[in-house]
Image 1 (cartoon, rainbow, N blue to C red):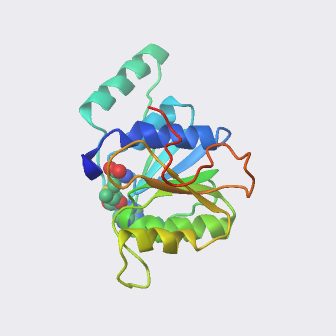
Image 2 (image 1 turned 90 degrees about the horizontal axis):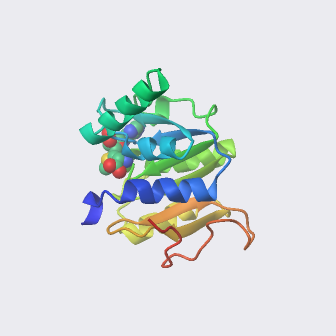
Length: 186
Ligand SMILES: C[S@@+](CC[C@H](N)C(=O)[O-])C[C@H]1O[C@@H](n2cnc3c(N)ncnc32)[C@H](O)[C@@H]1O
């Protein structure tokens, strides 16, 4: 299924929820159609999509949100900022996440480190700021080398499934795992 494995959305949302249960506001960088933000919302997080493109939730998820809106008597929408993440102030967010965020990957990683924020990023296509050609594996290693407190975990999905995330240098950190070992059950 590769990058079209739609299980990535709930799988990554669960990972984020289990690893950072207290994060309230989430910046979903390169959030595309908003699937990840939808599942994060279901788990109690206030996610905001930040993406250069205007896009809509898939119909099935739109319908689910409409039902919730009717039930709760208020309009439920997932906020979206249309623009490059490089131009967005990420300081108000508790956590920065990105699922296959392409050109936004390294900036999100670096900005989270600079701001001292928790973050979780699943890199996919290779988009380094320095333009150096790298394999996907080298790209991940490069991103992981940007700070000493980055751990990795594997999501139980096909395709690009390694999460790089900020962890304490403690074995008791929830969600911490060596790459290669699934930590999230669907
Ligand atoms: C491969 S898609 C992934 C979308 C979604 N996260 C998913 O997993 O289906 C990459 C997304 O990143 C967005 N993107 C690329 N560069 C960006 C940037 N600099 N700032 C914000 N979004 C960006 C694109 O518009 C696109 O929606």
